[in-house]
Length: 365
Image 1 (cartoon, helix red, strand yellow):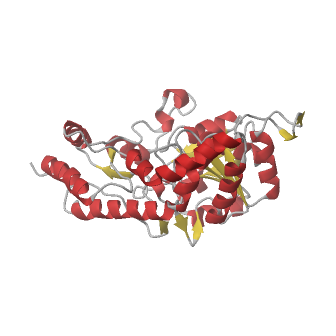
Image 2: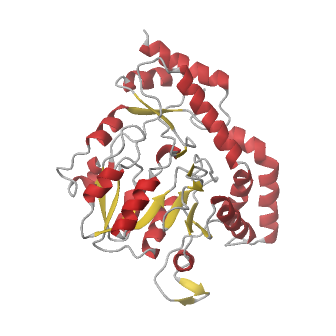
Image 3: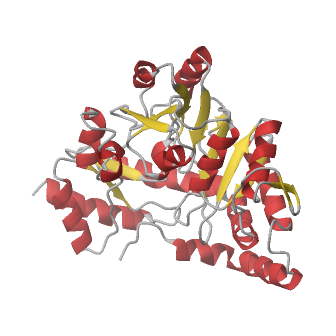
């Protein structure tokens, strides 16, 4: 059996450090916004090259609180992609804003800057690009559009921890950004967790207030806030992983490049790197008109595989009414033909060749 992500192998590498940290935390009884959360926030801010990093309860919360802190609210339009996990659009809906879905680049699967430009109206207040599958979106073009139209830029970095573009980390380019530490992420916790980053003192102060019941001083509440604090135990687990994140991401890139090399002659579309930034391969996603055959063959051999995402957001039941008549042809084609193979830092070359042999067997039969 080959899983999509080998979390057991990763844990074996950091087990001693994690268990020592957890034991110390239990002994000290500092469970809420304790020293590990504070240290992790400082360490991630330094790594990402931002002024502020604020731990929250999930990636969804990170996007939600970032939108509030940047003043996005009822009736505002936020341009984003329909080819992403629903949390991107959920966060927009939580604040009463309207997600405006636009099409994607056919090679990177990231939001199309040209499509953003065409979708801007007097109600547009923000753009939320997703650095999908670990590849940075075209931030040079998106930044220029946002600056010219005076729009907030809130990056969804839930799949791109460690990815960079133009010498800067994703998340360091917009007004604010949200990260997820879901266990399967490049930097994953042992449960839910998230992070908001920003270079704005005012935005950071607002996020800290919102994540802690709208309170700056204990038992004094200035706004209605949320209970959305990164757990101390999760920070213990994330800190040793953060020290190894570049190593992990480089290993993911090795896996991806070997896959692509071994499948270069096959009739399918392997991931495209646009050269604008460094892809960190949260997922290794291909396109094939014979997707269902390939998935069945892989599953029969107990090889992990998945489809991210089979139904784009504008076709989901929850958005069906408000998106009636909306056509996003590139998004729809990619959703109908995409599938993802196992990828993690601990996948061996032998396993990669085994996976590719199954795919080759289907496509050359």
